[in-house]
Length: 270
Ligand code: HEM
Ligand SMILES: *[C@@H]1O[C@H](CO)[C@@H](O)[C@H](O)[C@H]1NC(C)=O
Ligand SMILES: *[C@@H]1O[C@H](CO)[C@@H](O)[C@H](O)[C@H]1NC(C)=O
Ligand SMILES: *[C@@H]1O[C@H](CO)[C@@H](O)[C@H](O)[C@H]1NC(C)=O
Image (cartoon, rainbow, N blue to C red):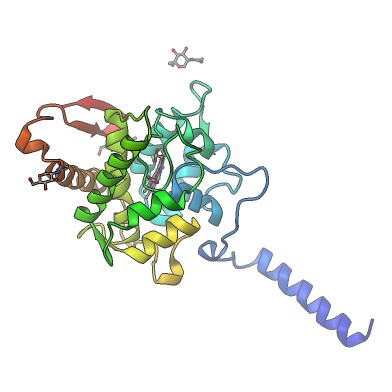
């Protein structure tokens, strides 16, 4: 080996070690595809966080602390909302009283996973772990350049109708319905603006299709914390629009039976 080559190789090795020991690499830029043996699930966001290393890249053995740290560092969730969602997540671990869950547990049908997803086929037709372009194309056909409560809700209702028409086992529990509305409130709030409840369609498409945070489209970690109150408040706005588009208020079909998600993870019927 020529001396100059030796020095340049040595310098490269040294530089790599300095990076490894010194300033931590920016996790927003450390996106990697899942490897063999890694698991992913039906939630495009949790999959994304695992792909960036905000959650264990394996997708496995996620503790309350892992979830709280991961959601804080990636999207500025406060500890309360992470605890709130963790309580739902551990119910999907087939082992009772577990202290962790893996992303693929979330796919167990009708625990949390439900029919009429925005980007997955119904469990009757395929795996909820896997993104489905056709399903998502139907969803995004309802979006204009900016997705808001109205178009986000229209997409939900369209998916419900076409799933009902193609899946003879189609069903949706009250919890499933609350999740659908909450998921739409969440993706708009996290990728866009939680106050006006609007988001650039391109960011939504980018995240769902790549399971990657849309930093290259100008998205940044929100500067204000996201809380349980913000989620439930925005969920209520989606719910009101949903009732309006289904004409359920005028028909009085669901009066007195609307679901409320209550702090502390209790589910009650108001
Ligand atoms: C930033 C935080 C989160 C956001 C923005 C988010 C958003 C979403 C969205 C938009 C979907 C719908 C995907 C589709 O319909 O194709 C979804 C699905 C799901 N998410 Fe999350 N999520 C987040 C965190 C979580 C957490 C912490 C849990 C743990 C309980 C969770 C559990 C689920 C489950 C079980 C599904 C599957 C529902 C289905 O059947 O479609 N998510 N999430
Ligand atoms: C979140 O905070 C509320 C009070 O604002 C509390 O009642 C609730 O138990 C908390 N939930 C969790 C899961 O920590
Ligand atoms: C889980 O915890 C509950 C409440 O603490 C307890 O009654 C139950 O026996 C536990 N189940 C198992 C399988 O450990
Ligand atoms: C609600 O009513 C409007 C106006 O009558 C109608 O165009 C629309 O299709 C209805 N929506 C549903 C979901 O039935």
